[in-house]
Amino acid sequence: VVAYEQGYIRNRKPNQKLTKAAVELAKKADIVLFFGGLDEISESEGLDRTHMSMPAAQETLLNELTTVNKNVIVVLSAGSAIEMPWYPYVKGIVHGYLGGQAGASAMMNVLTGKVNPSGKLNETYPLHYEDTPAYAYYPSKERSSEYRESLYVGYRYYTTVEKTMRFPFGYGLSYTNFNYSGCTLNDSIYSDQGTIVATVEVENTGKRDGKEVVQLYVRDKISSVSTPIKQLKAFKKVFIKAGEKKKVTLEVPMSELALYDVRMKPVVEPGEFEIQIGSSSDRIHFNKTILVK
Image (cartoon, rainbow, N blue to C red; front, side):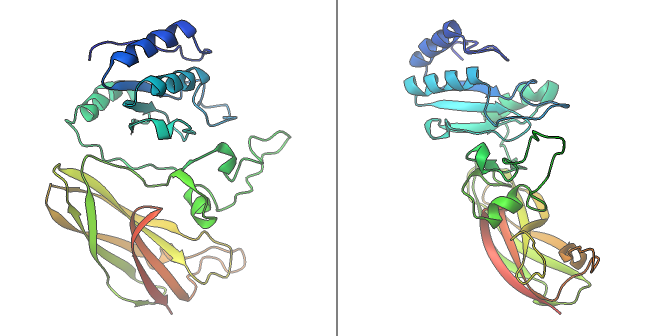
């Protein structure tokens, strides 16, 4: 590390003096690490967010930095999704969420390569706030808050309406790569009892040991009521050494395929279901159709 500049003040408007000092330093640097995200006023208990942007001082500085240096890495600290209009202009994003007291040292281990990051996003990152299903109705401007999105919260909405996203639910890169192969199910026809057992082989094709989160989604092809096009039903995080291949088994009780209706109560409807194995909600590697009688 050759130098440091503060760049901005939390909860304040852009500061020209701080911005200029950071930009001048960035012109001389090989790589710029920009630390930003949502401060304690942007997201907190007891208030609603009225937009999905980072504080203006941060976005102003980041826009200036990417103009003078093409190797800007954004290190995020935030507990919820944000808009990223600057995404095309940065070389990488390392998301620490809310790391707490030991967050800085943990992030240093990731940035220096001591630890191979293996987290996955637990929410969808939309392109714009207006793309969210709650945009038109929340925060409420009148007496009542109406949650009109019903079951279509998060990825259940974006995948169903095929909305373009910045990052899908379950997405995450690491310092290695994984290849999926050989997906099998324990059966193709099920009653409304029992368990679906899916097995898939995952190979670490990179040069670093790492962890992968294998995700299983289910799609009800012939539902009698409105339901999301896919829903996460199981996931498993596995550690795989470089060059190693592991079998990963995911189990889903048939009760997880049930829907609830005030007239029918919980029931697993007969018909076809699609079992999807993937590394995110938007990246499915295998589709298997089963029949429920």
